[in-house]
Length: 192
Length: 115
Length: 114
Image (cartoon, rainbow over all chains, first blue to last red; front, side, top):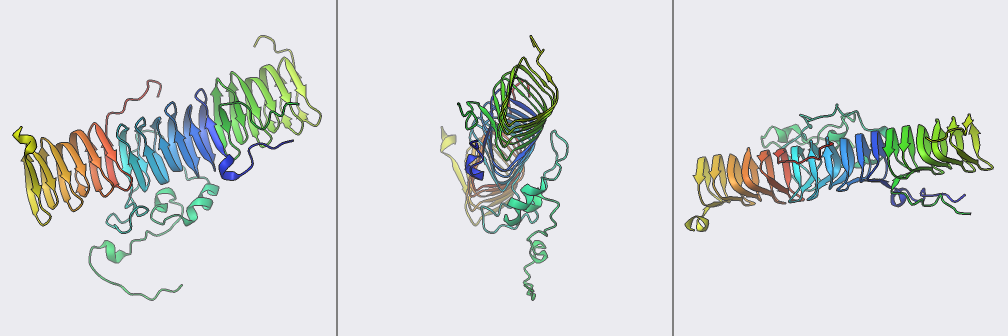
């Protein structure tokens, strides 16, 4: 029997939720997701969420990238970027190193980019990236599924991981000397 | 013979790496290549492809299963179990087609008229 | 007419601590701490550093800004900007590369069934 879309992991996976579909529950996966209908609950992807103009997501979202042209009510965390296009509307908090709001987008909530060292070299002013607080709706986010964690996050930029995985006890990259504001150079022998 | 598994003309496709734990409802065709646990309720057709795993009660117009379904199926028109599928659960539909090679365990009720 | 031609510039080496108010446009290349209330357009250039609550008609930020922002038309946070604070404006634009931490309050029209 001819197998279907299991060809290649990345390319073939093109999950589309059509405009009359409503999903109520938890959705997770390792491929891009295009939503034209309605998803309520939780969305966890290791790839990109494309929310089209007709789409509504009432959920906490945890993805690599998100391109929002529809309506989101909920918090969005991304390891790479979140873009609200000019039709995008969102109420909720965004935590991502890159956030783009195109002229025409509407947004109400918090944005935490931390020090966004993904797009910039220095800038340790903020030190530890802030945790998202004051959620407008939705219960606290449970930790992301282990397989998504292990695969993608292990070698991602270290300043971003504290946002996504409080489970991983990686210490923040800011050496105490710098954060204290004093110019002090501490030379220590490090063992490799 | 029409190989309908490669690409059904559906707008909604749940890809092979997707896992959904919850309820799906809608008014269009749905192709499942991934995993769905919970409940599926459609006004059109459900296609569970070879890689699809559905642990849910299903209520649709038509159902075509080439993958795995565990749950009760209630169709207003037709249920088709293709070869290599594995279905455990009760089926209620006016028309049922079970292909040679399909694996099925459950009750069949073809008396469901006028749903 | 005279108002739109008035552009105040706070040069790179200047530090102002206090309240700034005015009716013309203002370009900040230096440092301002305190409060700013303008009727027109405020531009914070890439060398500018503003630690103040800002009220203006329109705001273009290319540098650093920290404080609450209340704009009546638009706030543009450009690629070289670093902004922290709460923003209230009908239009807010964040360019790729900008760094922003804080809250944004725009009017969001949600469909009825959401």
